[in-house]
Amino acid sequence: MLEARKLSKSFADVTAVKNLSLTLESGRIMALVGASGSGKSTLLNLLAGFADADVGEVRLNNKRVPGPSEVLVPGHADIRLVHQEYQLMPNVSVRENITYALRFFEKSYRDFRVDELLRLCRLTDVQDRVPRQVSGGEKQRTAIARAIADKPAVLLLDEPFSHLDLPNRIIVRDLLFDLVREQHTSCLFVTHDATDALSIADTLGILRDGRLVQIGPPVLVYRQPVTAYAARMTGPVNVLKAKYLPLLGLPEPDQPDALVCLRPEQLQLDEPGEGGRIRAVFFKGGYSEVEVELSRYVCLRVLTTRDNLRAGDPIGIRLVSDEIWWLKG
Ligand SMILES: Nc1ncnc2c1ncn2[C@@H]1O[C@H](COP(=O)(O)OP(=O)(O)OP(=O)(O)O)[C@@H](O)[C@H]1O
Image 1 (tube, rainbow, N blue to C red):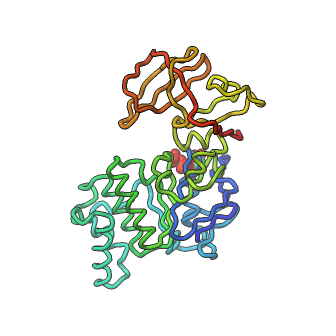
Image 2: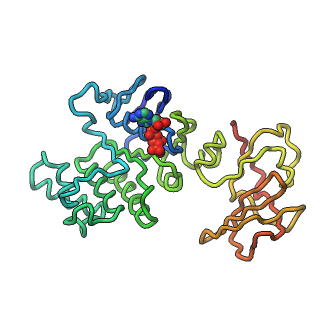
Image 3: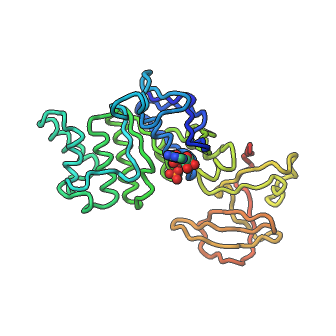
């Protein structure tokens, strides 16, 4: 179990991580979602023992993870961090990059384990190529294979999906699932895009300005975000003042200036009502996202499978259910 206890870290006048605590259970996947500059990379460096915390500590299975100022070689034997830039050795093959991580093991085990890792990470066919001869997805899987070669307890990943196309994202997602299931590795990854995090993580945290503003099961964070920021970081959303709810057929609220969060799938297109008009239609494949102007001040996003809609068409909107989520800020 990896624990962060009240971690804080500042650089000059910037506090990158503020009083942050979290617990990563073994064999689980945690995702932390945050905008650029929210402290994601700094937190990973603290968790991996590559940066000294100003306050607080990191513990792995109840033992303190020392920072770089306390050890000769920074880092921890049971915690691995895969950087966004992969940091592979450029002049040796994919196979040798992975083998290097096992250089202290006997040759027979090393060969067996490298073959196993190549299979797990779907790299067998490109094992003899050097990094510049493989795709971005293959480079990243090489970095992951190297990181997990000697079965660390914890794998930390910085933006593992951000440079990948959809097929490669699915491969990495499946790889992380297999890792957790077969080797009981704990994974924590940070990302600015919650799309993959929602489907893969057991726990989803929202980072803002170095603080963990919310953490919980992805379904809960998605449906009950505490703030507009948490709502927006977890997917398309309509955030509006409660005083506009009567435009959707709801009664006047007691707190007109409170914010409510309506996911596009909570709304449906309806017969043209009073003044509703389509502002834009974005085709998304299996569905379209439609922006509907209900008034001068209210424009809502709605999902639909209808494909006969055009900007300018009059349209109405109704709520699929009366469940409205009120934001706290
Ligand atoms: N070595 C450093 N010196 C000074 N400031 C730093 C340093 N590293 C990070 N910061 C600052 O700390 C804050 C958090 O940075 P961090 O890189 O952790 O954020 P991030 O969420 O990973 O951002 P991104 O998604 O853009 O990589 C930022 O304001 C950044 O400018």
